[in-house]
Amino acid sequence: MRTRRSVICRVGERPTVPAGGDVYGLIDWDDAPILIVGRSADAVTREAIRIFARTLAETGGLAEDDPDFTRRHPLPDPDGPITVIDRWLTRLRRTTAIPWFAILDDEVVIAR
Image 1: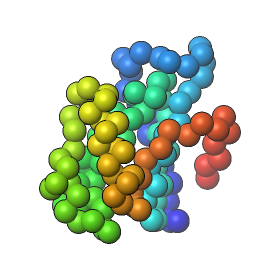
Image 2: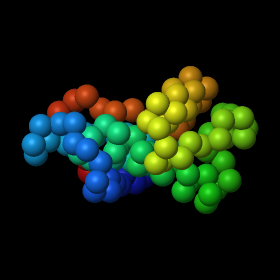
Image 3: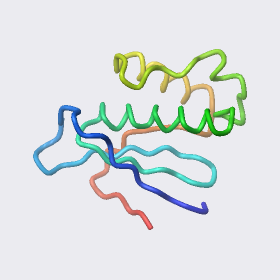
C-alpha cells in the first residue's frame, strides 16, 4: 500500500446517523485504498460511484481481473436511484476481487 486518501462527501444528502456521527466507506484497490467519510450511507455510496467513474475515465478500465466488467455493466448515475447503485456494487463485489467497496460498520477507522 503506497498511499491513502480520504474523501469528504458533498453536502445535501440526508443524514442517517446520529448528530455528529459519520459513515465510513472504503474502496479497496491493490495499492491505494480510499476512505470516504459522509453523513449518510447513501452519500458515501454515491461518492464511491463518482470515484469509480473518475478512475474509469482516467485509466480506461476498472477491474484488472475482469477488464470487460464496465462494458457489460455500465456505471450507474451517481445521482440516480440508490437501488440501482447498490445492485451495481453487488455485481462488482461478486465479479471482481479488486476493486471493491464497502460501508464500514466499525466505529474506529485508523488512517495514516
